[in-house]
Image 1 (tube, rainbow, N blue to C red):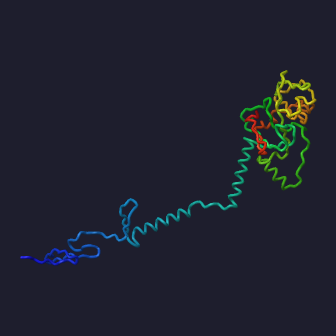
Image 2 (image 1 turned 90 degrees about the vertical axis):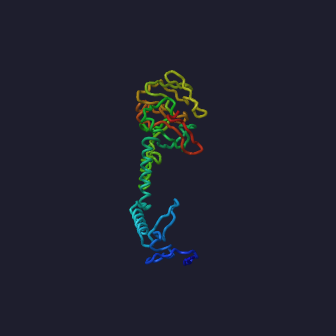
Image 3 (image 1 turned 180 degrees about the vertical axis):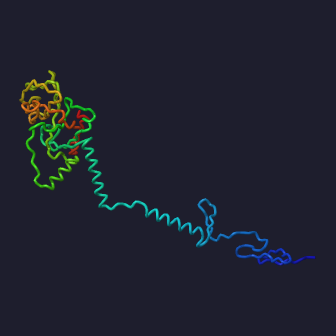
Length: 295
């Protein structure tokens, strides 16, 4: 005998319920009842970056609480981080660092000097700024024949220098000169070429310059000048620890030849030598490089 089963709302027949057991029923979340499979509904599930499902707890649940806690920690970290200093602190600090670096460069590496006269033309011209290698003496360098060098006035080679009467500009120039950003304030430095060193004998007669009896070839002389420029002298024995210096513009240079009656017989103490002239650094039109030791 055929038995007509009741149909479900979708049209499929449903199983008859056992006596005393309520039948399963369909709900918006699936089939519910004593024999329905257990499923946990996650209305706030989302898709992770790796394709897996990430379950949430709904509004106000654990996931939202964790998110709030993470955001709070991030804000605290940002608040505890270092804040940028104001510009009125940064600028003086940067200026101080720059001055220290300039002082270190001036003390141990290079110092800039201005050429005040034409005594070294045409090698060095009036107004040229030259870089003097101050590291060379610290590494055992000593002046050698043919090298242009800067040295401190050994005594009355230069006239007294004018003094700035404005106390403000005088103080500023003193500071800038001390750190090496401008040429030395007292400007009692000279630049000449080493002709002979301690223990050598130098002499000039007619147009010929000799050191230890050997003629010195001088291609650097100013055009129209000869080695003696009308001033014969010698022979002169250069004392140990001294150098004999002359300008390339021989007819316009008050050098060792002119100070033979002074201390050292015109020679300059090696201790007064700042270092070899390595380069012309200004102006751009006259940039030149003479080498690490001025050769």
